[in-house]
Image (cartoon, helix red, strand yellow):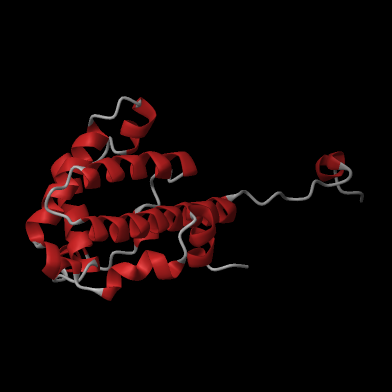
Length: 175
């Protein structure tokens, strides 16, 4: 069986080296906190305004301001900044934290489209950083899809074999 990272590479079309090129430099030092806050705010404005009800419903139990904070704190931490997310919420545990949500291929692509648009509108993020970030986001989105597929596979009900003669269980014992 392939690792979830390998499966994410296959599903996303982004190999691990490209996905983790964000680690080659400290994007937090390069971009600053406000760039991440702006990106997450722009992104979640798009998400909560999405015309597709099925997509908006994924986020219906989340407060927009909390979602923005969770995302930018995670991005800051993951891209070289202080561990804001972990200090407030504990280990990121992405698959576990996204477990309640239907993280499907369709949802990942929709999420990525909003992130691509938010990045394109980010004047405080340079083009090279945008490319690296988008590759990381694409790989990570499909890492979550792979985790969701594994979860669903593990949660399938186990079928009990049927008794060949189902009526024997109701027969009175012979004396």
